[in-house]
Amino acid sequence: MTLNIHMSRLPNFWRLQKSHLDRARVYPYNLIRSGNLQKYYQLLCNFDFLLGKIQHPVFGVQALIEDYDLLDDPEVEKHPDYNPEIVKALRLIQGALRLSAHVLMAQPTQLVSQLWGRLES
Image (tube, rainbow, N blue to C red):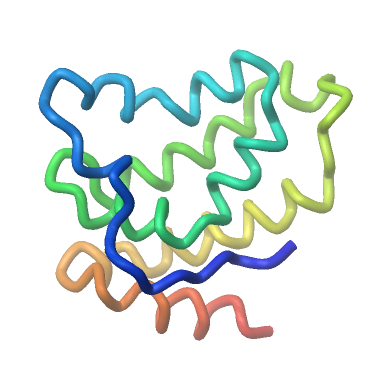
């Protein structure tokens, strides 16, 4: 699994009006609950999503880290699309985000260097 790094502008997903913020907040949760693990896996490896969530004034790095905690749902492991290798990769990304949280809170643009430095090996 590779991290999709696109340094383009933030996607429209993050240019939401206040009425859409609740939907954005629960989007990863809704993917898990609906059993769409493939889309959930892709979302949490999408650089635009990661950067957008970190830079968004309502969410931030902690909310992003919590999106990975959804993997702890006991129903996830029972799902036919459950892939332990992908889950392992997502846990590595989450760990890198945790270790980098203090940097990313102050400078979200450091996401590339933080992930690269912590995931290189």
